[in-house]
Image (cartoon, rainbow, N blue to C red; front, side, top):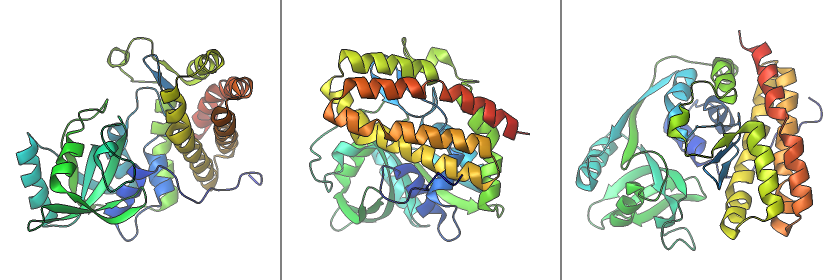
Length: 315
């Protein structure tokens, strides 16, 4: 794929970056871990307004164990009964090393400039220690804040995740252990079947999706019409500050991963999708409705194309 240039740079990759930190030396790259979660394979509109460039019915926790298994790792999931129980469990787990915490509400992480309250923005961090004397937590926040400190009270408020649409309060993972060594190319190969399953919207319980939800090509066509009608300010901020950025990044990484294991046809489709999603950023920011809608309509048929191409790669 001579025309595809792998992306290296910043982006909202909190989940994969936090997971890579937990796996430590020899961990697969965040790009490969993101691929293993199946996040690049689809598009969804949840209900009437919430848009993501990820599989229909997908959320980060739904693919955590599959991604870990593909990489040859296991971990222990803990869910606190309440704030006191969760904090006690966190302190106990920290005796063995860092802890993967989330989802948390980003708006309560007040070391990030401008954060003054809930934004309905999910996030993941790696908690390093709790300082009992100062009642502060020290953590690595992959959104650009290594060794950040935060009052424990604010961490617990964020961790309660009351404003988020998925997950449960006080979820954390610890006890990460490697059970086999797996080369990055094999992590990718092991993840192909799940990628196709998510893209095909197979096994998704539609009853758990809000009424009016849609996926893949249908979602792209629907969003094009919404753009032409006029997006709300909140939706445009969500798309331009998060959804488009992470969607294009995921697809660019997916194209790179697919090419690494010889899935050339699927890699070409994913690279085209990455270009199309990335090309939404400017027209959405400047308000060029016609251009953004045209890009989305070109994007719509590519989901079926990618499903067919992946089917040829899955044994």
